[in-house]
Amino acid sequence: MAPKMNTEAFKDKQKSIQQAYQLAKERYLECGVDTEKALEELARAPISLHCWQGDDVRGFEHFGGTLGGGLVATGNYPGKARTPDELRADLGKAYSLIPGRHRLNLHALYGEFGGKKVDRDEIAPEHFQSWISWAKRNGLGLDFNPTCFSHPKAADGFTLSHRDKGIRQFWIEHCMRSREIGAAMGKALGKACVTNVWVPDGMKDTPADRSGPRARLAESLDAVFKTPISPKLNLDSVEPKLFGIGSESYVAGSHEFYLGYAVSRNKLLCLDAGHYHPTESIADKISSVLQFMREILLHVSRGVRWDSDHVVILNDDLLAIAREIVANGFADRVHIGLDYFDASINRIAAWTIGARNMLRALLIAMLEPPAIKAAEAGGDFTSRLALQEEARTLPFGAVWDYYCESKGVPVGENWLAEVKRYEKDVLSKRG
Image (cartoon, rainbow, N blue to C red; front, side):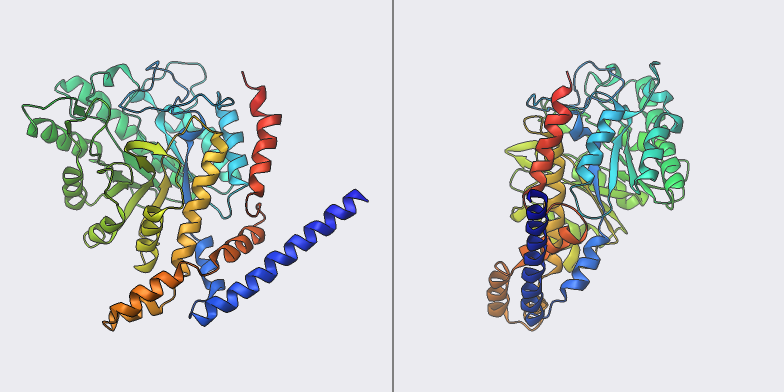
């Protein structure tokens, strides 16, 4: 009898989800919103999961010994991935809990080197072939990043802007090879790879020369991007930061530096939600920079007091980011990736929570009643505010549940039981 009861309970649950959706659909229709159209749009919104959440940014080469570049992964939750196969298995579990088709963002230190020492200026597409094959089997796109930290030649906090020409050339070569790897990924998968350059270069205390490192950084970047690559294969992006641990007083690659560089060199600008002042939202920057460039990259994170890379939650900052993308019709011009690493909780849960929240935020934006923008266009700011507040309690949760059910992933908190099962059966057996 138990299996029959379980089956009946499952059917009842499905029925209640569909009934709730029908009621929500009717309510949204009253507000001029087509929920079916919104769900079709959401299904076309890929989120790029970040591989480094799965192993606390350790990678598979171990040059640096400890995490460098001002990065910190706090906590020691058991079960982190130790090998590429374990990391891919963990990612597969996370993708099975997230509705839609998505992407994976790889850092260069996650190559597979067959036990050989392959330095950063020697990496090649062959070292990422297993990742490419895995992504192809699973219908995923790939994005890529040179790894300019956790290495002896980055130990003093400088890479592409280093005073030593030889060290600069080492990192130039590494970034050039990273672009080639990105192009190989794009060609193999038929989906352009976004290759994003971030360097930690900066100073702990007040510098005497702020211009010199920036001039060297611009020169190095020009060398990195000298060889043209088709945008059908690879898209180049550059990423600024306000400060980091060990670079509290000065960062060569500031927002202003990279904004100017991206516009003048026709590159994507990466806006990282944790790379600005703790009280500053990147949402308002999206429509500003897209006046002057075709596309941008978003790294969605959550800074608490500092660039602490907490798991993304469904807060006002995330809702504002999603709304800027959707309300302005920027969906095909904004590449969305997650960027955080919390080692204090189950890492698969961290991926799942963040990705589902990013998708939920996009859905809420897609379900916004058109009367809000119409009121503003008509100069009726009273109605705009009233409708904005009323929209907060529209039944988006029922639409989200229906979307998850239609995509074959757990509805509501049911995904957590699957993570706990995986933790018991798989993660707990890792040393």
